[in-house]
Length: 277
Picture 1 (tube, rainbow, N blue to C red):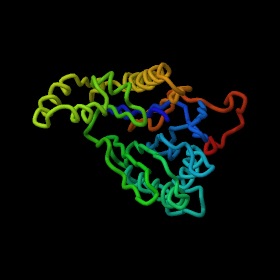
Picture 2: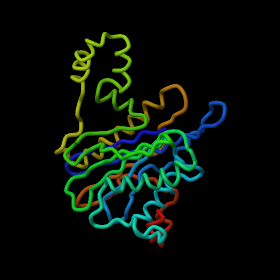
Picture 3: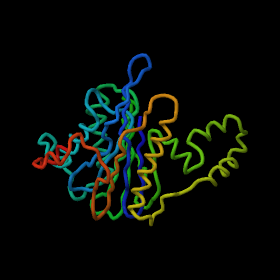
Picture 4: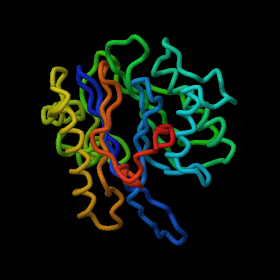
């Protein structure tokens, strides 16, 4: 599992994830690795990116490698897919639909993969002055997903996926499972009043005018809180490893804030082929 967080303010959108990925073994056992890549810049010169959670692989291929294959198509570097290159009038929704074309039509569906694989595709459409984010969930080989708008251009706030319980409890006062549990023991006629009380506990740490630097700090904090929360629960530490953070803005585009490398860039000064990174 993992935690994947987005914080959206007027100045841009921030993506943050942990680095844990879980390999399910026979007999209910699991192996957790802490080196997974979950944030991907989808075009070196366009302000659009994606983050992922859930299944870390499709077949034997990691989502990180598949995302780089997708980036090559978007950049016009794959001669087999010339019409995938992003033009000036591209949209974030269109990028999300192309992601479905590849991840689901070409890979997920033919293999009959089971389990949830989630993506948040975020950034700026060509010529747009505001960011947006689109949710893609692959959870059934028999059902082709349709991207859903998770955060529109005029919205601000935070989103958390995969294991959002810690940040939901922290900022909302309860997690997403509580209303259904209360509905099992409270008369339906009283539920609106109960929900009104619960909603009074909501806090909104991300406001539209929040400076981007503070949004970056908030996103990293939400991942770190979830890592600490998961650590002290019984069972495997399914959230962990280095926290990675990236921002996307209209003027600066995609920028890494914190990132792990499997190699030391200082030892590879001649490696100028950034498409391979």
